[in-house]
Image (cartoon, rainbow, N blue to C red; front, side):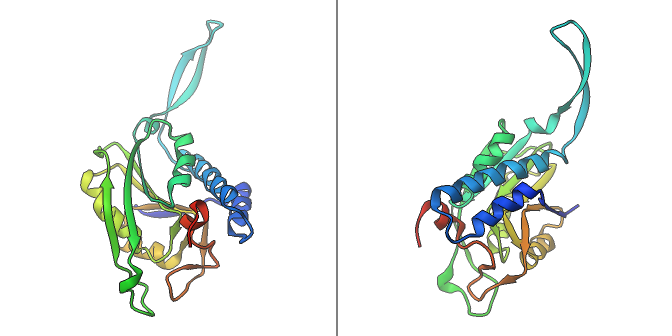
Length: 219
């Protein structure tokens, strides 16, 4: 069943504050996205299935512990290019993840003023086969109107039916969340903040600007 998880750890919120600051430079911005990816990964692990195991220590003594089976069944799909640093952080937690990419962009040229519905152009999709015991993570830093994520999910889910489907973002809006869950009610959304507004160009307010441009340069 779908749900929304806000990663409200103080460190995550402090990093987000740095990302929002217009004076944060490109390298520091990119590093911040990596750090947030790692912290969100920790939060996701808390929801994964755990089993009790027993191991033998170097002293020949038995010790009880846990094993997280889902760590071996993770598929991460990044939306190019903005999600690359975020995924770099996720991979630090999910080291065995199978990786996929989708190149997607909102088509600004056909956008109707006042509408929050954008056409989305998908130019490249490379996703591994998704198995029924997989945890699928689709990463894109900004979940604004939901146009991009819903389009990406429609392509990615053609590759199989995972046990869980997660969308990972840094900032979301209620509008975008509602739109995703209305179409894919089983999706779980992990985000660091939910901002109150979307402007006439479809940007989150107060937001942090264009994540791709701020991480990699551009205008």
